[in-house]
Amino acid sequence: MGRKGYVYILASQKNGTLYTGVTSDLPGRLLQHQAGTGSKFAARYGAVRLVWFDEYDLVVDAIAREKAIKKWPRAWKVKLIEERNPDWRDIAWHLI
Image (cartoon, rainbow, N blue to C red; front, side, top):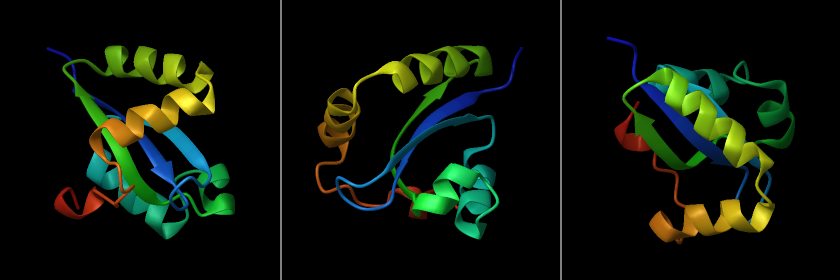
């Protein structure tokens, strides 16, 4: 059996810069982002607020979903976030 995977979206603030990523260890990856070592892009633009994520049984499925989301227009990503998290709250608190 393979590892679980997670696709996630970080934001700098509500309607701010978005970063889409994938990992097999979401809590660990979030700690890296908060320390400024997760992604140069996320660190540069202050995108450390977890505003959306999905869990997949296989990391390969998460990778495929991340690739698809990265190609989406910004408006689609905003809609995805706001369907679950209309206030763009940081939802990482219960994962770390």
